Each structure stands twice: as structure tokens, then as C-alpha cells.
Length: 142
Image 1 (tube, helix red, strand yellow):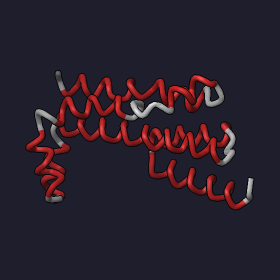
Image 2 (cartoon, one colour):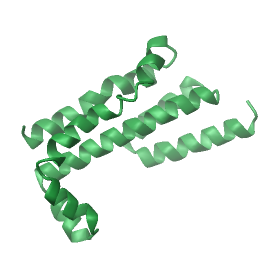
Image 3 (tube, one colour):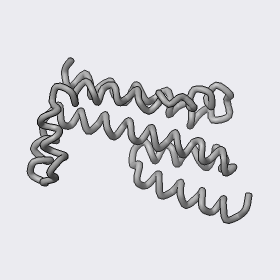
């Protein structure tokens, strides 16, 4: 399978789950689907498609962090596609956690949904925004 194919299909695998959490958070099937531990693992399937045949290069890039080695790895099509799959899967894992934390702490969907959109594109900003909202919600005792 080509690196371009893996790259092209990684995010579309995650989109339905993001759509459920953002657009249909109150639908009973959303909660049922999102409780599956397989949800964040689906984008990782693409990760493993590339990681296994390029494991040596991947291991060299991460086992002894060196900016030049990492830069060289990421400049390859398989390296960029592999990191993309890693990011998409991690962001989905994080979004799923935020979805359930928001429900547990009574964070409204109209507050959570924009944070989830932010998380898709810039997960560190989304995480900080969510933690601030969750902290405020917990402090308010609601």
C-alpha cells in the first residue's frame, strides 16, 4: 500500500467519530459508539501499515532522539504519513476522553463542540481550552 494512500485515508477513518461527538453529542448511539475502545484504534491501523515495514527507520528516529535523524525521517513520504496517522489517532483518543469528561462534568455541547473542532486541528490548544473549561465547571460545583 502506498504512503499516499495511507495518508489520504487516515483522517477520513476518524471523521465519523468526530462528527458524532461534535454534531450529535446527545444522540444515544453516539455514546454507545464512542464507548468502544476500538474507536481510537481504527486510525492506528494505518499507522501499523507503515510502521511495520519501516520499523527500523522508525525505531532509529525515536529511540535516540536527534533532530537531524527525526527531520530526515519525517521528510520521507512514509515518515510523514506515519506521523500523521499517529497524530490523528492520538487526537481522536484525546477527543473521546474530552467527550466523556464533558458529559461527566456537565459541560454543555455548545461549549464542547468548538473545543473538539479546535482539538482536531491544534490538539494542544484544544486540550488547554478543555482543561480550563472543565476546571471552571468543577470549581463552580455544577
